[in-house]
Amino acid sequence: MIAGGTDRAGHEDLRRILGLFPTGVAIITTVADAGPAGLVVNSFTSVSLEPPLVGFFPARSSRTWPLIRAAGAFCVNILAADQEPLARVFARPGADRFHGVTWRPAPHTGAPVLDGVLGWIDCTLYDVVATGDHDLALGRVQAAAGGVFAEPLVFHRSRYRLAAPGEA
Image (cartoon, rainbow, N blue to C red; front, side, top):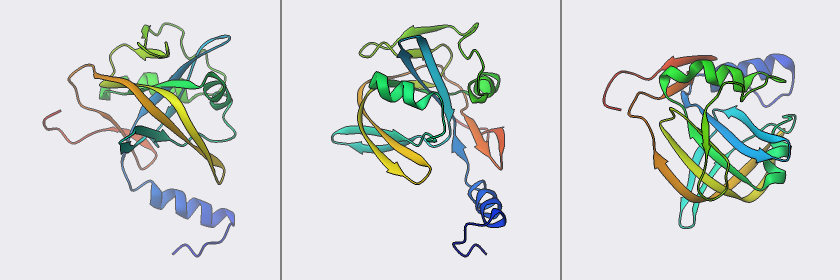
């Protein structure tokens, strides 16, 4: 049982329990002054249909989040099950994340749409809300489209996994 404490054991228990909830995996991309930038998240969510809003929770310690915030625009790339290696590259700090990655600019913001994704959502930054050691980044959807027809990449119990087989 977790009793709201902030000790290390409480953090590990909370992380273990939250890991029981499977999430999808997405890469958030932007075009910064120095070129394309991106980070992997498993905290992406739909927020509203009117206005059309989505959100994700970047860590304040992220080196990439300030680039996305400064650009004022981003693209959510929803990963397919075979894109685990791409997720691992975008999760590594300091990696040249776009080396060998093919992409095209999103229609409204120019943020990278990665090849082979299940779908993408082109957004302008709508609002940022401070939430503990993360921010809630809200994006107003400008365009969205499906990509490949495949199973999604899922993160569960601190591992990348395949979703249960079925209709994609």
